Image (cartoon, rainbow, N blue to C red; front, side, top):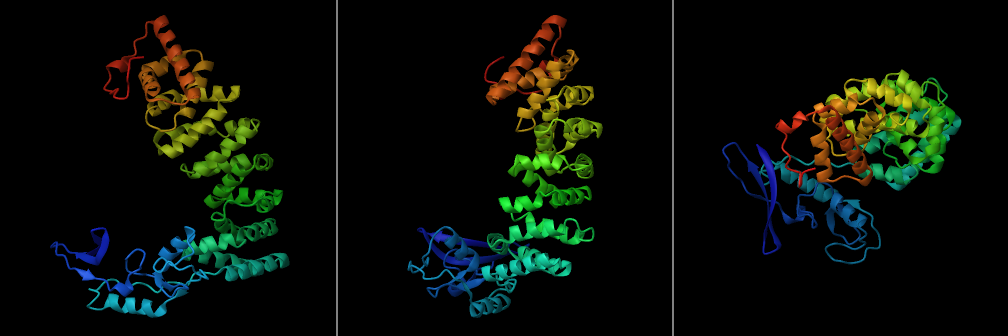
Length: 431
């Protein structure tokens, strides 16, 4: 038997709240929630009732949203509150739990006893203890404090916000840097990175701790071992400051670590973004990535990956094609043109796709243009122009169409895709 909740409104006002158990026989049993169990904001059964300074009880989630919206008044009485403190109403909560399990509650599942959210004072104490343990080099005590933060974060989003707002990010960065050269601190470092993923954005002082040579080396080691939190954190650091990219490229084996990451997990968008930043900032890294077969692996990703992965893979191919060596490597892959043509109308962000096709065709011997024509690229590019695209992309599409038109005139080439089953519902006028 499932339960569905609904509020019936008549004349703009809220009437009885009804809980309707739906059975296989389509029977409906109407149960009215007692008004004292309803949150005055949502009119729903309260799961975590709290009292505010006005003496009115609300569900914690709803009153927190009210305060977060900037209000400092009681929603019911409209009085200005002297404090925004929320005190758990254990009496009402126990009454609700008893009612849920009674015949009056129709056997509604008993609401669990909510955990009391962490306070700013408690977070500050944890941070102080972690700082002290870090200075002493006390691995076990640091592990205890970081694990406590992890547990608090898992309990609620509110806890995560409280931990983040009370300076935990910097303390964690300092801890990571302090133990980064400790070969036996892998578990602590992994746990620290996991918590740091919800501490973003990291401040400048925290960044300076995570981007020291020893810290960056350890992050790359975690990445090499398959830690996706490390992949995410590295990506965030690279996007915050270009100097971090330069520091990362100096680390021995960093290219191998990223290649291992995308080989292990073909959906690792974070690693693709980091690779893009590295090549864009320092094109000298291209040669090493090409030696590690980045082009072929990236092209394979385009075959059956979801669009978000395909789009990031295309940004990597596009920046690879900025170099002569990269363009030659891309052209030698026999799947490139067929996949690019296939994806033209299938992905939402087409800028990098068009740029790769333009660079490959413009630098090639003409065979790439002929192949694109045979596969129906002409019509699809026309559709792109009709639907609309950015000015830079539009110029490249126009130039591609001119190249194809020239080949057709010179070779008497017929674009057989015109007789295909493709529907040009987006075309407003002929090209």
